[in-house]
Length: 130
Image 1 (tube, helix red, strand yellow):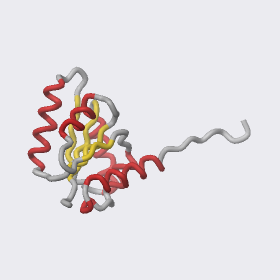
Image 2: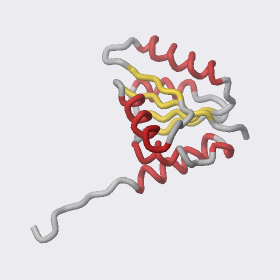
Image 3: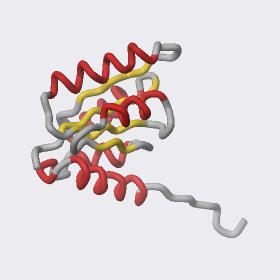
Image 4: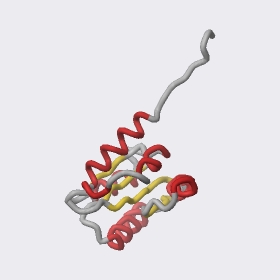
């Protein structure tokens, strides 16, 4: 297995903003980001994904997307050949975990570790006694 490269792709500026927030705390994450603008043509999004994947020259890519079933998610799935993986529902705890996660085991184990962290970070709290 090769070291997994990571691409964070979201609608609007969420990718850059979330990565920036995490990097201000933990330092450089070694990820690439892609922002999909409102009204952006599908072909433009697809070209951006292809360009970044080609620049990475990686055998394995982990795509972190914001929304399952969206255009970015579907285009990443389409591009997801070989050992690459798409993980949707990306959140800040996943990116914090990425700072210490071992990428050497490949994209799928990395995705599973990030998913577990993301799920564990979701909670509901109610007011006691109301």
